[in-house]
Length: 500
Ligand SMILES: Nc1ncnc2c1ncn2[C@@H]1O[C@H](COP(=O)(O)OP(=O)(O)OP(=O)(O)O)[C@@H](O)[C@H]1O
Ligand SMILES: [Mg+2]
Image (tube, rainbow, N blue to C red):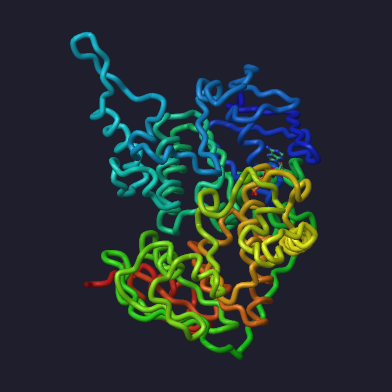
């Protein structure tokens, strides 16, 4: 059988980095291939070469046995390849429907004049989103979508091309479990129709549900391709990391410090209802809830990014009636945002600057920047979080997605906060790096840091938190110590129907 897609001897070099090193990659019709590897292994580079966003330095690509040149996304599209990129790329000022049909808005002629056919745009967009079984207003501006919704719209867009080869670069990284299940069904259905699919992920537990086979990259090289039946988590991790690796159990300290953050009866019309919570030094508090349950909204309201209608936020014993991010920061609160591109990073700045942006006070004296100090803090964070970067001076946008995420976290850890709120901190982070981040967070907790964190991966919330709050329709519905609840029970609490 001729392969639908066959790439051979692909090489890609960047200054100081070999992103791909003699990569061969073959895909048959009906295949769902999981593409795995640590942060910076070369996954997105391979994706971008196949989709024409990046040119290889060497190598060739065949489609149905014919050699092709893919020099632009348009070339790739003409070959029937459609791609969901790791970084969201919706146009904020256009509606959901307009984004899905971007660049190919259907027209109709009236009296010899072409008009954009809005009805047709809505019809095609509705059908694409319908496949994903999600309810997103087609006329909503993309700028108003949260990250999960953006991700779903990007996937709908890729589906709407009716591609032969669909490439999905971490499509599930921002999706809560229910939406991930639907995505798996859609991917399986597309494969059964004879399409070939590449699926990049860091969530090992989804591999048996969605893939037929697995290719692992490490340091730009293909380590191997194995059928899913052989792809046990141990085997895959071994291939990804290159040595045996043991999960570490977290050390939980029984002794908690004083209350660092208190929220009393916080309300925001339609979104948050009468929320109260207490967070102590040394405590890691997880917030578990479905998409749209109010997780992100709660963190943003506490941090003063979004206004609140009523309620009290008390930091270190002092009530702040009018929370604003700068006032919160001054009181030792930090927030790592879910959308790193829009709110967390200045991508054209060097890695060094992005690691110290939030802690200017620490790296300057009397308003004068101390470059030595800046470098010292940045270097330490690159070491602690094992950030893969050619140097501290390169632009942050040259880092792989997961490494950019580490920079966002490192930036806030460098502020030495009293309370750190983290919204999806491990989005796009490989399993080893996750442990490093949480080890560091737990370490800081031992020194008195209080953490409030949100993750779409309920396993992770259960694994890392000392205590878990369940949020449902903007209300805190349950509170559990980590040893009071198992995964199934927590899932049930999160999905519970509440009658209001
Ligand atoms: N435009 C660029 N300029 C310089 N280096 C780059 C560029 N794009 C990628 N790289 C480097 O190439 C390597 C591979 O990056 P790539 O984005 O393919 O990793 P990845 O496997 O997708 O990782 P992640 O899981 O973090 O998304 C990294 O070391 C990255 O820093
Ligand atoms: Mg990537």
